[in-house]
Image 1: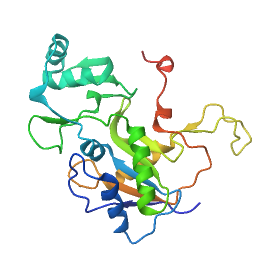
Image 2: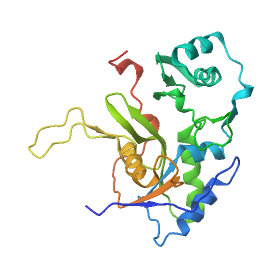
Image 3: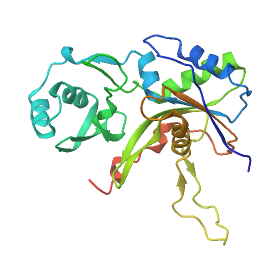
Image 4: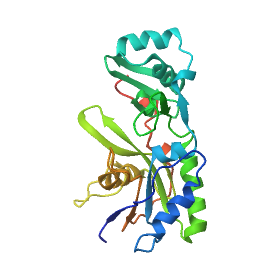
Length: 251
């Protein structure tokens, strides 16, 4: 197996609404001393994708419903933020002090519908997730292929908490040009025993590896290039990683 390299893309700076994000990322890759190749994967923080897509909302513009007020009393969160969470969600799964877990309209189970107030500028400004992260990843991949002359895999990542473990880790919200989920059921292990349940969250593993160099705070590294990956499975987008509601054993 070839060594795996995780290379941070630095010097990108602040991304603004309607900036040409593919051009910004392409320029950052050109500044590297390596040449991108097929099966390389570019991991991009959800936040810069959302910023370029102008997914900002001013909290002062939000009309608060009775349900948002009720949940705000329980969670002790800003009712305007709660209203946005409800607008971005299909179901509230848990509400308690300082905690609001929902099923996002795209199917993610997450805190606060992924709405972010850090590193977005302005006391009353928040940032929503991209409208369609898989579509965003596909568009970025197409435009990057034109400027770089090579088709990279693209993963759009965000940090998630885990229900049974402390801390956050990066996961894939959107993906294009690689298998997000690799089904290994039916293969044999080293002893010839058939694998019955093994599915590999390949895009999540890639996103988590990139998180080691991208950071979670003030590092200012919104993307990383991974080299040395290999796969033969058919590409599928990040939606393949979502567990269907009917398989949720904890409802």
